[in-house]
Image (cartoon, rainbow, N blue to C red; front, side, top):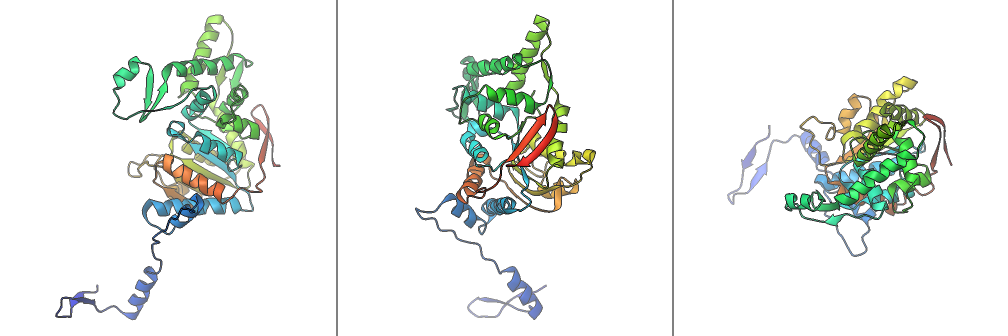
Length: 369
């Protein structure tokens, strides 16, 4: 190792004993400077995110995610983009952001928690989220039938109404088993709010999967439907989660290339990744070519939500040559930044929309139009 030597009477130090090769290596390591970014009144979100790639810490990771997105949308193979949604995104105020990504043709398939889709429907039926505080008196809120999501309030009485609405939609459907995609298509047809994620997915033919649909208020509504049917002595509907598996893997095996955008983690992340693993059933073994994730989940606990995209390569979920990036930035901050980059750079301009033709649970056709 080199030693730091004191050579000067004024206390200055000099470094000695670095070989020419070591100095060459050192120069190469110290080649790329950290950018001290400049923000002026005309700076756009896209420009800011681009500059972040030359900063440090999580700013650099956000910039790296943006670069992966740019490469993904420029890819001539036109990857099928899966959007995984978890966390309190609508409570945070991201409903319009997600909706605009659908409209801009940035997403081909949505995989979500039930809570996000339920709260989209809750808003579509005229109900709202309200500003609260984390230190609220929760016992008092319960007495008032107010539900708290960190610093956001919702009206539990209106939740009950929307639960019932979801069950009543099921009442109109022919009895039998359905995938979550099939049921949500019926639900979407009962919504007439253009601000709705589900409405726009139906309008543009973007399939929506909720693999843990029963673990949500929609599941509560469907349980009401089931109990009502039992009391009335008639058959109702049931959600067949394995049918979900079959449907989504058909999308994977019919795609030339796949990519994923993970907002938080949870079941949607694992489900999209498992769809890749299940490809062997149809004779395909190919991981995602592009993958990004924005999350605050920790890596050290070994859980799925925080597991790195590099780790996913060991499972074959992400291709060994894939372009990927992760940013540990809470989605209410990171998703608007990356959405602003996609929309501001017009990355999806001219991108053909993917159309799906289903016959029950069979994907008959998947083509670009």
